[in-house]
Image (cartoon, rainbow, N blue to C red; front, side, top):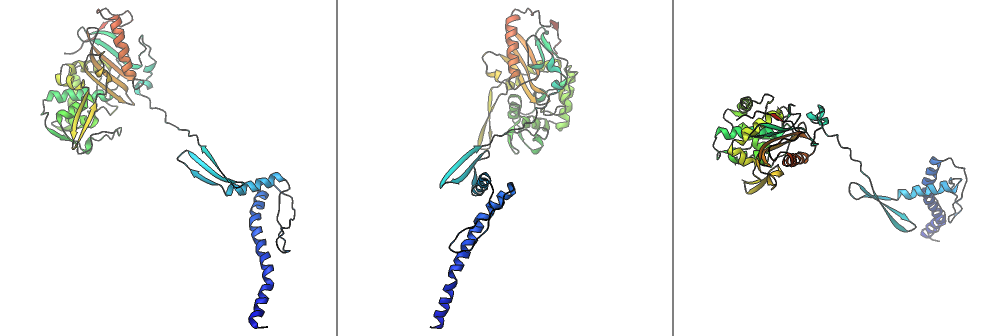
Length: 396
């Protein structure tokens, strides 16, 4: 017999043993993880089980004493084969192989959103919202005055001094109009005009160039903060001079409870009372430019190759039920929702002030309540028994 043949015969002699060893190793690799997992969950009884292969090579494994534990071990092995797929932020799909079939379980996770409690206004902190009134107004401060007779038809906390938000822009617009500066002079929005107080947004990006007249229109009609700041910044003498003139004008009008620190109203340090604001509304009504621009329903400006559409912040301007001579809205969290107007109701020219209203639309609802109440009780100039019949001096 040749040497090569002897080697082949010698090799073939060990093939059965090698095959049995390979089968035993595969069986051990498959079964041991499940047995070990079952052992971790619950103590198990020892039992030697011989895994029969082609040869007599036994492999001893540990199996749970109860079938329930064994099923748990097999289930855990199956879980390892599961595939988890996320279908968005709140949807998870689990893909399982069961008896040769693919089972897909989709689970939508419930999301609990934790929102920060709304910041209280100065009026809420002072307890002004607890004041009751015959009209059940949502504004914590209100004042209604006949512009011609100076008669107070309605008042509620009218001496309270609170932040006035963008009602500030009524003074800003009045001073710019009275200064008779060139309306066609171009003014560019700069980084100095960007709000660092409340970080509010604006459609007037840095570098936007508009005329003074356009900026005044946007400040009074659409309460544009960057427009108002740019008007004060470019006033002769600069922003500091402009703010000092704002305070001087307030004193001249008899606004004893009013102070300004900037021209937009973003600062809560811009403060006033309803009585002072009635004086400001009366003065603003005497300026034709402020009357026209503040009651404008909409306005378009060209910015580069774009045309931007701006709208009034007071929807009553577009209402056929209202005849408004001058108006301004305002809001910051410290001030709540605010509104001042001069309007003709039931044949009477009225000045209305609403400060620190509770909700986004409640200042409008309060104005509607007052209008209906005046139409029902004061149409002939006769005050209702529940209103405060006093005289209030309006400057001018």
